[in-house]
Length: 217
Image (cartoon, rainbow, N blue to C red):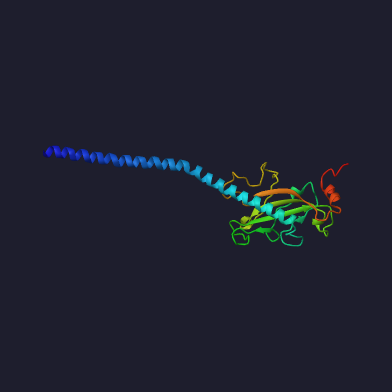
């Protein structure tokens, strides 16, 4: 009886030891799998964040354009687009040097300060051949709009535009596949459109002046 009990006790201790080893192996396997899929999960989350950010920037650009069309944003007020002299090079207008004259879309109550995570700054340039003293809303104008993150000015440095860089054949505008932070110095969105005239007198001729070949008969 004593020998049989000792044998049973030894068998039980061996079984318990195997159970611990199996648990350790299972934990190692799970850890390896988690390490393998963690980058994919992180990339997926970053992509969703960037897609949401670009969606918000697109909506901000549309809001800015509608504010101009409805004259809620008028000449002489902060955020109104700056006149540019060349129509066919409108896309090559420079990036903003600071946030002072930009239109703020305040999404987090921080007034688009550099520590804002959700604030958006809208930059606008317009073109028509009217003198700078003329109200552009009377004749209409071509418009280009860029939307930057408010934090783009946080660490100083020069902001970029959508145009291709001379030394790098890439678009600088951020894309959905960018990392979660994206290129902080690049615009989220760049849009070109036309703003119609509020005063129809002379508006047709102004429009003909802005298009490359004019209004040929």
